[in-house]
Image 1 (cartoon, helix red, strand yellow):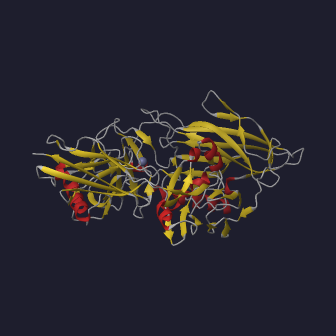
Image 2: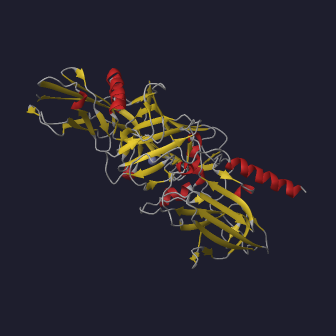
Image 3: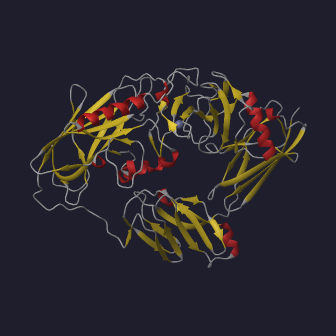
Length: 562
Ligand SMILES: [Zn+2]
């Protein structure tokens, strides 16, 4: 009786979910070309899940981007990094579509933005137009595709968000991509988790040997194990028409016929996206630059992408029993890849040892921690780490060796430096840097208050004090001082900084602000003459660029136009 009730309840839940009214014909393709993706929804990226689909634009910029449905422009965000130039359209049914890395906007929207940019004298800007200001209709041109912001090549980033601004899988809305290929499995790993758990006599993570069978599924070698274990898989999906390794849609794990774990990319929220670092084996990623998705949920992992999880997705193997663990990986089109893993319960013959790098600093995930030496202090707030971890910390002069980047950090850890030994002049030029590959310093946002410099970090590594005494460098790109450039559509200068990086810039012509768009990927500032603010024949250009410690440089030149 009880079982029947559970079944009815299950069917009822499934039915209500199916009726959750996701419209399948409301949104159209935002580009007038066949959809070929270089990125899928939920794809694993650096510190986040990909929140939309990346649509290829034939390796070029300037493709017309159209409104996916009727609505109004509800937000415009222009940033140097991130989405670059991005447009948000709010639709009458409550969903929002987002279009990122744009080159420019439609003339009407472009004029609306430029007016504000000139009024505020800034390129980076965020605007929230009112519902009646910029109305759009389905398939109306709203922008041209581009490569602005943190984009590695021309493409359109397209997102659909629900009423709570949570990104959803655009494919749920009937936007179809041809895909006849099943996901690819690159590797499978097994994790002995419990105190005395072992797999094949070892307590360490191990790669599982897989054999590809004729029917396209994989069979794993038999594992002899005991205690609590779990699995992780490195998997990608390719769609037709592109060689890109994209993300998969769903993973299911079944133990002896019972479902024990599901990972699904229908929707997530931005507030949880960084927990990706818990879902993947971060240590493996840090050392191998490829991601293993754990098929189990760690105790402090709140991600909403899991469903039907039993015992956190882990398996407790008992002596002398046999188990069949099946993993099915799916793409959105329904192509599947199955991995069968036979497991035999067997007590270990030897004592199982796990290597733990014990250090002087055992940091508890749910307690704050601080340490100070050599005038350098560290404060780790409660919850910055996902689990209790031995941190490798040492101090040499002005440098703190602060563990290594194989442990993820969730929220900011503060590192402080006492700089009372330095002269005022030196202090002005100094900043806190993280030492990267071959000791190359990169600027870490430094807050200066008297004799104390602090920075918030979310990556372990070596941090030190560095002085930047050189101002930024500015040079003309498509003109020379004193030149006539009547036929130029724009004017470009190149700006770079050797150490602390560029903080701000400002350009004027004959004393009047001109808008220059900064593209960090090629270090250029561009002013478009179609803004019609450069109207004189003789023009004195002045560009001032300031780095993160306040070193400033001014470039001046005269150009002529008629
Ligand atoms: Zn994208």
